[in-house]
Amino acid sequence: MESFYSAIDLRGYPSQYFAKTAIVKEVNIENYRDVIDSFVDNKHKNSLFGIEINDESKNVKKIVRKADSMDVIFFKSRDSKENREALKNKELTLVSNPDNLDSVCFNLAKENSIGFELNLQEFINNQRYRRVKVLETYRELLKAYKKYSFPIVLTSGAKDIYEKKTPLTLISFGCILGMDIRESKASITTVPEMLIYKNQKSFARR
Image (cartoon, rainbow, N blue to C red):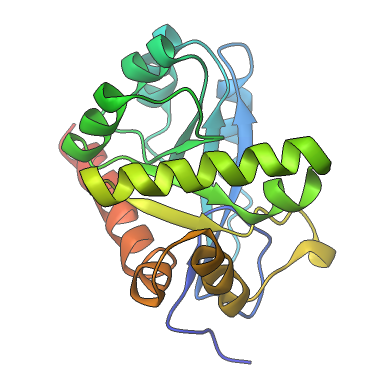
């Protein structure tokens, strides 16, 4: 099966449904060098490499300096103060687990072209209260998106072959959350393409 709309999954498991898929590994100040080095000899066709920084914002710059070989760089959301500081780093691609965000965060995201991730698998994996909380958080984020116009990306979040999703499933999820069909399609095509290009330009200027 050919890829759909040249779709890009910025966090997922490689599949024939997407033109490109990002394999993302979590890092912190203790392990980031080893994790980034482990990617070098394992490049797969049509695969992108990414890291998710799960650490204090003060360590983001140090980790990012080593991450020039990465296609995408996530920051895992923390409290609002940490999120503000992290969003000052233009080399970031996306904020994952988007929570504890305010108008300062949204303005920084727009100014620095940093996106927010809406992860389908995160929604699926949670039960009852947590699933409702994720849904509410995503919908509130989309309200802010319509006001501030920062990038939004839908991802499958798949970790193995059994969690793979099609582009149509992601588009449908976006529409359920409150995006229109044009916005949903863009969130798996032109928006991730733009963010990858921005990342490449950021490191090329160094």
